[in-house]
Length: 220
Ligand code: CA
Image (cartoon, rainbow, N blue to C red; front, side, top):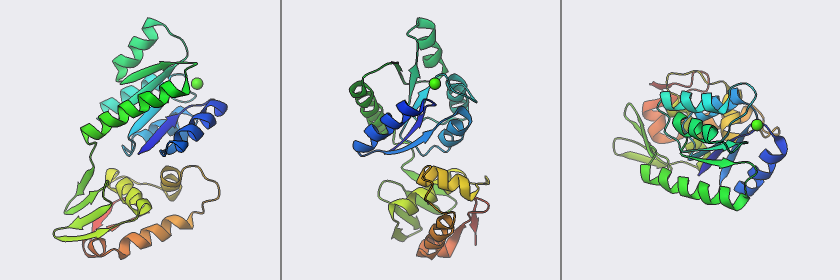
């Protein structure tokens, strides 16, 4: 499962990222509200951990925006002050849970597990469809009609990103941020390489061409 952590305190963000990765989660970190909102909107996350006070866009505003856009990803809201109004504000905006800082790492993990289960029960679109193209993100299978093929984990993430953002322009930098995280060692060419891999998969070669330029799934 992929988790989005939106937290501007670098030390806390680093510690949480390491802890979640140790548990086997894929983790993306956004250090400000605008990047966080952008990434959360893709809908590719199983759980979002969202800080309340953020530079750029406040956590509450991000939550309201996501819910207005019908992004149903479970959100754990982090608040610095334990006041009734803070908690109510977060829950009213659409948070599924909240934690008061400072919190224990074990408690955060327990809550992530609880929301991950809910996420699985909700089956947040394990199967995505765009025209006749069908992607099962759990089994990493892509199909058109009866023709099926397996994708690698990264190919699945890339195709999922493109399908969830159909009709929207995604730059290669955005694709890198969202799939490879903010690993500075990743070169831009990797996006072209993976688009090439996807195009070579037979159902995709036949009926749809994902484009890194346009983020569209154009029917050939
Ligand atoms: Ca903060």
